[in-house]
Image 1 (cartoon, rainbow, N blue to C red):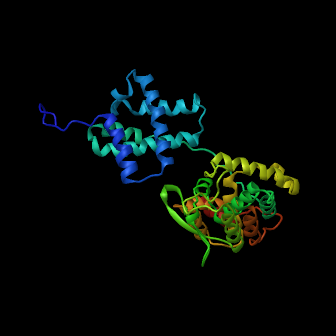
Image 2 (cartoon, rainbow, N blue to C red; image 1 turned 60 degrees about the vertical axis):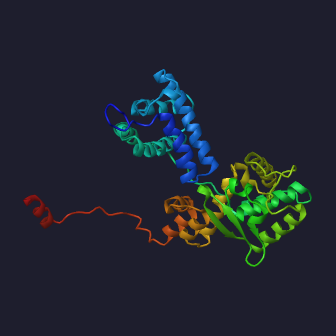
Length: 338
């Protein structure tokens, strides 16, 4: 409270930013560590840019300094000087918008500035069609690891589990022994984006592979299902490296893989597409994938050429020659009278 005016003083920008991270993101929303890291990196970049533009150290900045022209300049800086794409630019803007929504309730004086920044639109960009593997290509990939070796056994079980569960790579490497249920109806408990949990059933063959693998490594309940040689969870880069090795071997058996770029997420897309082609309802696929919006799952329909061809085949093809419409005299007379 300002003793001279009797008005409540606006909170300092550093206090707002600290409250956003500690109270809003971590305590109230309980977001994942990945989200916190992404938002943290956004504000690191923004504060350094603002320091250069305003000649103020970050602790001296105010919300008024982060006006629309500065934010637009920052977004241009990301793309032109740092070489970021539109998708990354939009992610940075999402983080900034989240903070400003939080700040608007605590600093009403800055509301006009906040509203002008919130009006900055997302940048549109071309979305490439989803890449996915055919059944033959997927089977060749699963058969590629050398199952006579320890790492080959692990890689085979890992790839099979990714294909069965549609898990993101971060979800797969985060699996613990306790998350795998092999009795009764075999399933895995997956902790997905935003700490959302889902249960995915296992094929009998996948359950058998996991049972043999976990008996081989003999780990405790909290140990990773897919460890490295040191017993630690595989890293994202470790999974990508093992996948590249498997793809290189699979290309010898399946030449069509030569032109394919295969990532761990490609396997997730592949499972979804194979189920869609088998007639599984799109809402069920969205549930298993952990999608909040059906629009996210709808992109699989856009990518499935065979489904479009079947739909086109159900439509009667028009005659080979289209006749131009020629109006009769009475109709022409009517039009002339208007």
